[in-house]
Picture 1: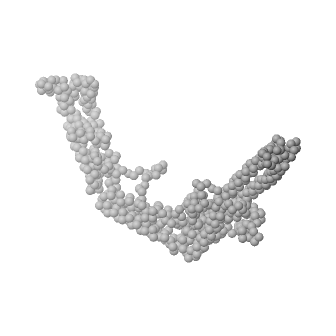
Picture 2 (picture 1 turned 90 degrees about the vertical axis):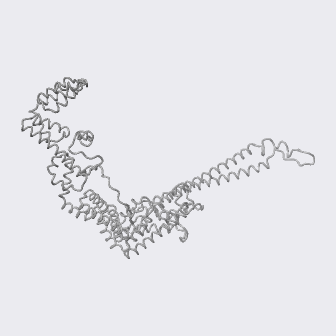
Picture 3 (picture 1 turned 135 degrees about the horizontal axis):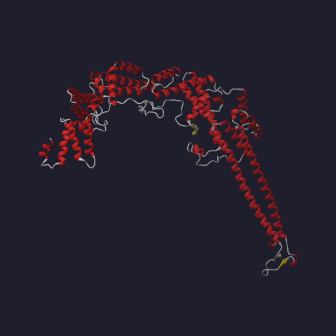
Length: 634
């Protein structure tokens, strides 16, 4: 009866009744690790925070700007900058004849348009050199764009000059008609009235006589006044147009200057600034940019002033000087084998003055040394992220040999800390393995592998596990047989399984429960065999059927019942019929009782038929008549 209650409560654990029922709340047997799937990456345990912050010096500026003269110049995406820097390190220097000619032309243009040139700047001569400079591929046709901007500015200036001439002509016309109108107003008289007309009181002088259509009263004089007003309106309109044209042309020109400055084309900024000062000599050099634009903020937030053409000129000169200084520092550090600092100085020089001669003409041999160091540094960063400390140590040693100023403290401490943590975890895993605490050993070895996946001592631990794999294999087999519900195989191998799971409370409880229940089944099978030998097949079947209700999945028990089935077919048929009538709705108690009585007639010693008959008799007969009626039935 106890087993029936246990089976009904633990159906969720195993279907129907089982030889072994896991205890509620107990840990389930270890499941085999599923193979990795290609469609989704297995979630990985987050590694402990690195003492390096996952960062090491990588020739990477801390911010995406570089400051020159108090102004922070944006460098753009650092990843893109690093990629371009690597490309630069692999390119030969720009020292061919065409590059030399290009730089000479640029220098000549700057000298020709310079205010210190003897005889003053020569705008036209400098302008004629721009097409030659634009033919060089490295110029990206920026000199051509500068020439186009200058040409459009000169056309606009001619238009402004034409408007100014027109205003002068209208001013001359206005003065002429004003003089003519004044003369007529003073001298034109009405001849029919004589020289004068007596008006006023006695003793007062007489006024000149003017008719209704002469002097200031004439239509001609009114037309003169209208024309003067019209000329003034036209002059004002031309002045406004002139100012608007000038502002628009300056703004268009300044856009190119700002763009070249942001692109770090400082020589083109210098040329544009000097041409600007020769085109417009009105002293207005303020850059006309939106106050909320990034360019305006670039200056106002850095130095607190509005940007001007002169400030772009000054900052470009400063950037050229700083780039030269960076390259000089790079050469000095490289000669002293301070490759780490030299690489940083070259990175800064490239970021600031990518297109300037000191950077573009640097020898390939020097750049290759930086490139090799740069790649090793990037690989070192990758091995730290991958926790491959064997390769990390190899790279760190090589970097220290190549660069005496390599900052290895953080790398060395990371290698020492993580390798020690991994080795200590392996030692703890060994201790748990010797103590037969396989679960704890597995956890520790997992920690060790996560800290340092390529630890050579992991292979040693694998060999240790292989040497003691007998017990581990038996435990794994026990877990597998438990999952497969192959309890008969566990009983067959009980003498090798029992020592292997010793000390593991969960496995021991499962093993004891399995063996106890199988002993019950074997005892029932043994009794049934004795009944069969005595020719009592019905008693043998009933003995097995009773235990079958508790353990319906035991294969041996099922086979024994199948062997007895042909011999007891009439008895089992009567029982099945009786149960069918009893389970119908409505219940057919009489028919069921008759079939149970028939089963008792076939096997008078049947406890199943007897109990069922008594139960149905109690339902049919009144309670007070049950004893006598029951005796009659018996």
